[in-house]
Image (cartoon, rainbow, N blue to C red; front, side, top):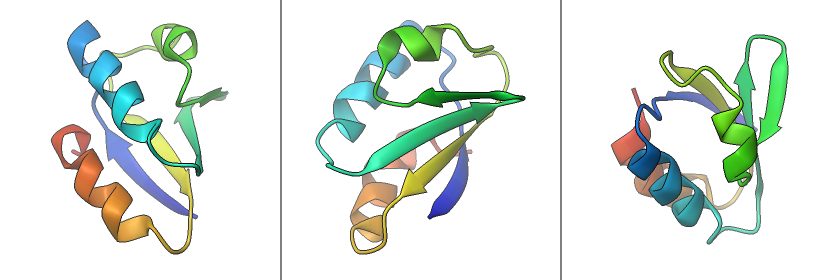
Length: 76
């Protein structure tokens, strides 16, 4: 598992983020304070405070470099 910080500060960014990570079969969790949300859930993401950076937990071992490449536009 790897954890990175991302920024999803617009509706378009949230949509493209969910589309990008949905291509992978791995699990992704967004952690904001005490809340843990499935990162593939658009409704779940909009329940978070998107004005601050969010921790993304990536539950993957093999594909991690490909995943990080896709996540580059969102990384802080």
